[in-house]
Length: 393
Length: 92
Image (spheres, rainbow over the protein chains, first blue to last red):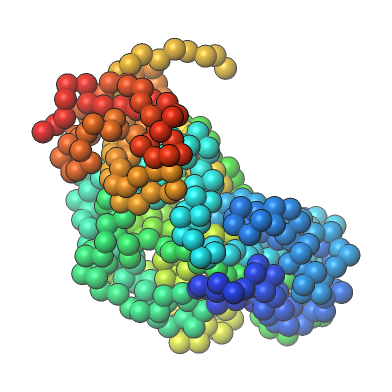
């Protein structure tokens, strides 16, 4: 396998853009990435386009990638459509990485794009139900429930075992809203207080409105190439993909003692990259609901069980900490256009590693970073998709 | 792979109240996971006779399977499904 570098990234701001179709959201992200990389459309050998809900919400059930890329002037090449729920974009990146790593292509493009605002939030929520196995959603299970009482993230049991409180659940949202307040691409730019988060409307007990990521539109893209030709296109610091791991959930009975799938995918990524969690200098992770950030600290090996809130209290994971987590604002603040999120995470890490993150720049640009992205829900206690990418500069 | 028949009993693993619902369902609603003595842990709604309030259910309580319409909405009123209810009446 060849070493693969990310040489360009681009993103559309995240938010509510009712008048923009998928292709209009994707265009600035794609051309942002191409211009950033110094490549021409004709340099791209192959493209992977991630999107989750566009079939149901826009009616464009097939060939969304071809539609989106034709609008951006990229035609003729192999284009692969990727649907993997909230991990669609990370899956698209893995496809592009694999094309180049294998030697099948020299330059590849990964795109993630999502349009969730269609003027009818009941339709959007209905479409989101479709990323859970139908045997769950047809029975009336809400996706948000999976972040409240689902066995994989049973917050009530964390309250009992470790004494976590509603204020603890709010801490990631407060930390990330500050980061998001500095990010011009973020959907929500107000820095929140613990009280505001805890006292906002209850959505699914114990999750409140401001602990939840919201309905968003957005897009992100990355250009990857063989590391040995990176300098031909761009004089910027090349960022190497040290590992790009994709796993699917496993069926678990209640007495299953195997490690969580977020853990196994992260440790597979550490092993392939030849590092451990102690080597990380920045992380973007999948805080679709704020408390899931606390659970993911444990699962990525950043702290011992139950100690998540301490990482924020002791300012380890804040923007000025030893290991900033979600410098972009994360899913709750930057926004969660589901099929674009994985590449929005990658964009943020690349900007931070190059020292291009503006007001929210981590003081010493990180050299080793990790993006964790997951999606969907299956019968049997697991998410459907787990993606984990480690970058080095 | 083998099919097994399940009985009508289970134990409430965990539950919550959802204050929003997609089209075809109503809010607030109980959302629950039930541990079956046969092994699996299953998602279930709670029988509609029980008021959707805190304190009505208690994790760990014995539950009993019933069959009733999926939701009291035009979309699902004629569709029967399984739900669970407290085996010996509500916690309070």
